[in-house]
Image (tube, rainbow, N blue to C red):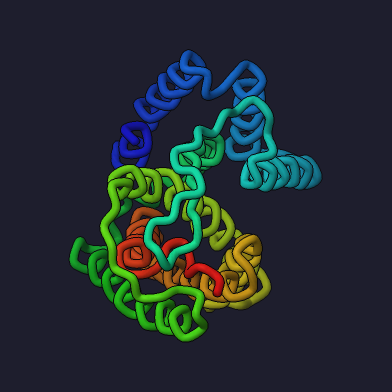
Length: 279
């Protein structure tokens, strides 16, 4: 958490790199990552640094980009060896109407996405001041308000979720996990990397409307949530549109993280989480 906060809000990249190194050393000491995991992290840093900081031949850039995309895809599926993702909650019903819920404290995804964030120009964009504080608040709050009916009404009418307010004793760890690990990793990947790449690609073909990038990224966001079923994929795509729209208006991953977390928190507090128990 401290490392992520430093990376998001500290202007000195060197300090963020020191925190990342310290975090991995502690993780290695605690057995969360082993030598194989450190090797793959170091390899990804080496390839990413070359790709982002050196002038390369066109085909060399294509090869490195392909390797990086493949690595990110595999890490998103927790397929890189050398990491131990700690089980925090296992098959627990948060309310009588909810399906069993499990949660792992993942170290692999957030760490890789954090390094991508620091090595790219995303951290520079986060600290730019082309929008006032009031504009940032407006472009964060308004999409969040609009997202509520568009997400929760279809979710409720479909029976995927039920209105079931409750407070549980896992709220504190869920909040830390969801904001700092889940929302950070997903927003850096889908908004900071994927949405920007799609928008830049569309611009080269004369399509300057950034909303197309938001829509295409939302479609992909829905697909990767296939494990929850077709309804969950649709709801995830709708939610992703509002996260992406926030990023489109602000160019700040932190803002899309806040909207993402706000939607998840409302779901957790007021509705069956992660979904209603099947009848």
